[in-house]
Length: 182
Image (spheres, rainbow, N blue to C red):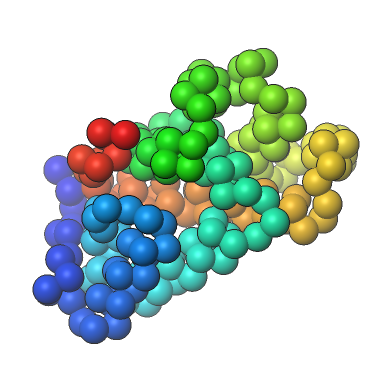
C-alpha cells in the first residue's frame, strides 16, 4: 500500500502542473508515472528530481539507452521493482532488445556487449559502494573508449538510480499499468 497519495494534475499548483507536463513530454510517456505523481506534494523535490532527470538521463554524451540500462541494473541489484519495471519499459521504448534487457536482469551476463557490461558493472559497484571503486575500474571504462565526461555521466546515472530507488521504495508506489504492458 502506498504511503502517500498520488497527486493528479487538477489538484496541484501551476508550477507542479508545468513540471508534470514537461516530465511526460520529455520522457515520451503516454501518461504521468506514479513516481512523479507521488512527488507532487513537494514542489521542490519534484523540481529537483526533474532537473536531475533532464540533465543526467536525457542529456549528455552517453546514449539514453545506456543510462536506462544502468537504472535497470541498479534497480535489480537494489531489488526495487518499481524502478526495474519503469526503466525496463523505457529501454523497450528506446528500442533496446529484449535479449539485452534479459541479460541485465540476469546479473550482467556475458551475453552483453563488453562495453555495456563494463559500464553496468562499474555503475552497480558505484551504487553499492563508491569507496570500493579502484583505478582498474576506471581503466576498464577508458579501455572501452569512455572519456572523463562519459565516466562522470556513468557516476551521475548510478547516483540518480540510487536516488530513484530510495524514493520508489520509501513511498511504496505501485508500478504503473503503462510499464507493465510494455
